[in-house]
Amino acid sequence: MKKLLTLLTFLPLTLLAHLNIAVSYPYIGALTKTIGGEHITTTVLAKGNWDPHFIVPRPSLIANVRNADALIMNGGQLEIGWLPPLINRAANPKIAPDSKTFLNLSHHIELINKPKVVDRKDGDIHPDGNPHFHLDPQNILLLAGVIKDFLTSIDIEHKAIYEKNYGEFATMWKAKIFEWSQKMADKKGLKVIQFHDNLAYFNKAYSLVNIGTIEPLPGIPPSSKHTIEIIELIKNEKPFCILHDVYHSTKTAEFISGKTGIKIVLMPHDIEALENITDLVALFNHLTGAIK
Image (cartoon, rainbow, N blue to C red; front, side, top):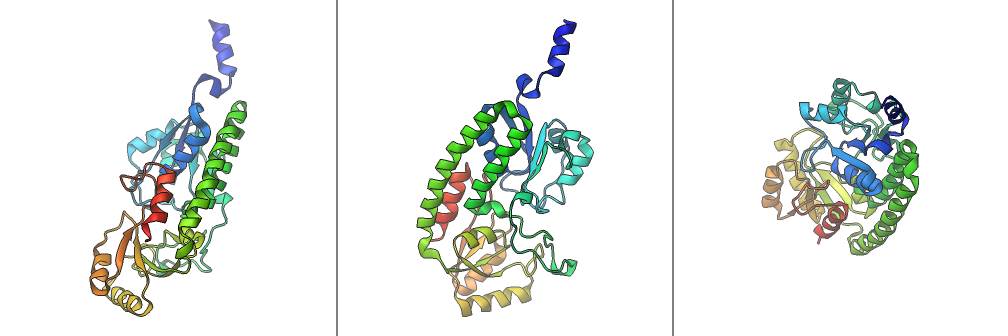
């Protein structure tokens, strides 16, 4: 028995059990599970219909990261208000930012809209740039490759499986990217209003032109003065619609719509943000089909 226990101690973790990968958001969980397959278990910390900027670090989430073998986060300071406290309280060396079992996806993406100056008077801005990069389908393909390499680095024995799963996903995803580009081809140059600029990468991918946001500044609720300015902007520029996230109230957008006749289009930001968004394909099917 003693010899058996000694042998088990030196066996690789993946031969004993699945890797338990904690991830910050559902889209990361979907990618990680797709690449990892049966060799991993994913624990998603935030729900898809929550505001991704503001997550309450509940005790249950602390337990989830305490028991994780690795952690994958979005980064770009999107989780800055809630994930660091979880990591600190969990005291799990496997999810420490300097460990090989920690992955910050934003370090592998060229972020856009990086502010030249960071000042609190400009609202809740992200110093590293816009962190909602997963809403460009090309970035999803890139992130799948990053996650494949990450899983391989911590579980070399299943490299061939991770490569195979990635290859199958990449083939499917490239076909969907072409399909979505065809669907959005006639939308190029379309003017839109947003509540919050969380669709910056989606708009860039399909050449939509965001001319304003209902928020006067990131994270700042709309004021009466700014709302009137947006109404005048809409009357002058005649954008196609208001692209609205699912986690902010649509009350101000409905007021603006009533004054201008502009329609409101709900745009989910992640899996399960709406009931019909059950996976990544469904997310982009919805996003590319909503503007019509």
